[in-house]
Amino acid sequence: MKLSPPGPTAVTLTVTTVMCVVGGAACFGFIADGWTGAVLEGSATAGGVAVGASLRRPRPLVTGRSAAPGGGDGSGAGAADAIVPGFASYEAAVFPLTSGGVSDEEKRARRMRAYRLAAYDELPRGVRVSAAEALGVLDEGADPHRARTVVNALSRAIRDDLPVRRPD
Image (cartoon, rainbow, N blue to C red; front, side, top):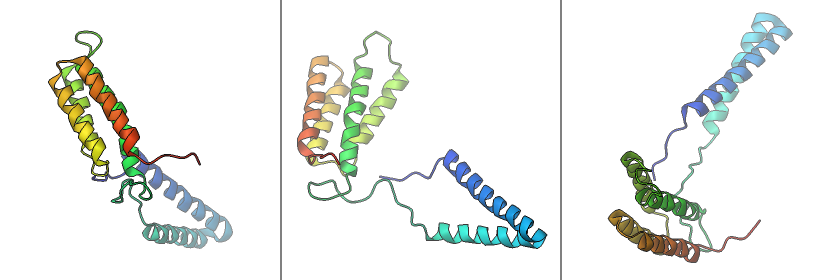
């Protein structure tokens, strides 16, 4: 799964925080020793921030380890938990409660989300097979009862194939 860069809000907040810290250090340096202190304190703080940022190792949200019982980081379990709402949303778009209740654009977006969730590599095989079957039935869009049955089967497959979650 491809990792996306941080959003503009996160970048803006990070830059603003660094600027405030460096500016605050420059103000304290100015109070302590005038302009020379301001330059030295601001430079030292900026250098410290730069060294800290270069030493920090970014941690991706999704790693290559599997969520097999007895190991893994749980990314497969998290993705599996996201499948049921994604598929229920796609099912609601295929069989809306009112005619014209869902636009074609929204239906395509929900379909794309369901396909992306089903294509995640870390999912257990049983979950992927059930997801593929559910996508096939939902894409047909002919029988709402059959669609409900396969989405329920997908939910059972997720419950059966994932490791038991114990409370902390």
